[in-house]
Length: 238
Image 1: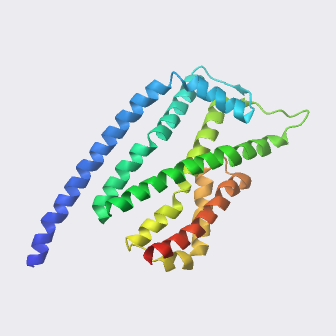
Image 2: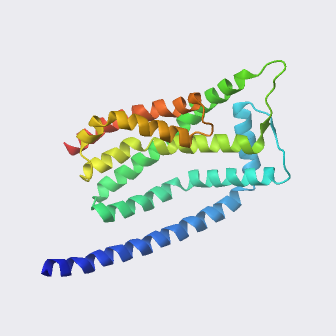
Image 3: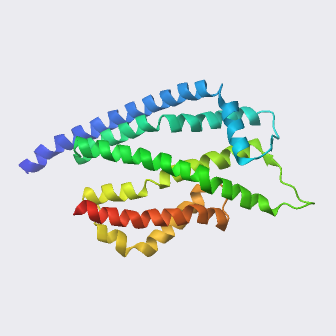
C-alpha cells in the first residue's frame, strides 16, 4: 500500500509535465509554421516553377482561389521541410525524458532520423516521383491529352515526398522499440505476413492515388525498410 501511495504522485507529476510539454510544443510548432509559411509564401511561385520544370509539366487552374490555396500548401510543405531539424530535436528531447535515453543515443538517433527523412524525400524526388509522373501520363494519345491542375500537382508532389520522408523512419522506429524493450526483435521477424498487410494499407493511405502502381512505388521500399529494421532491431538488443 505504501508503494502504491508513493508511486501515484510521481505518475501524476509525469502526466502533468507531459501535458504542459505537449501543449508548449504544439504552440511553438504552430507559431513557427505560421510565421515561416507566411514568409515562404512570397517565394512559393519560384518553388513551384522549379518543381514544375523539373517534372516537365504544364499546369492549369480551375478556380479563382486555387492558385492562392495551392501556393499556401506548397509554403506549408516547404516550412515542414525546413523545420524538420527543430521538430526532430523536440521529439527526441521528449523521448529522452520518457525512456531515459542517454544524450549520445538521443543525438545519434535524431541525426539518423533527419538523414532518413531527407533521404526518403530525395529518393522520391530523384527516382519515384519522376517515374510515377511519366508512367501515369503515358496513357495519353492523340485524342486523349492530360490537363493537370495546379492543386492536384501540388498535392501529388508534396504528399508523395512527405510520405517517403516519414516511411523511411521505419528502421529507426523499430530499433527504438527494440532498444526500449517494448517489442522483442523476434516479434518483427515472426509477423512478416501482418507487416505486409499493414504496409499495403499504409501505402494506400499515403499515396495520392489508390492505384496499384503508386502503392507499389511506396510499398516495395517500405517492405525493404522493414527488413532492414528487423536486422537493426536485433543488433541493437545485442
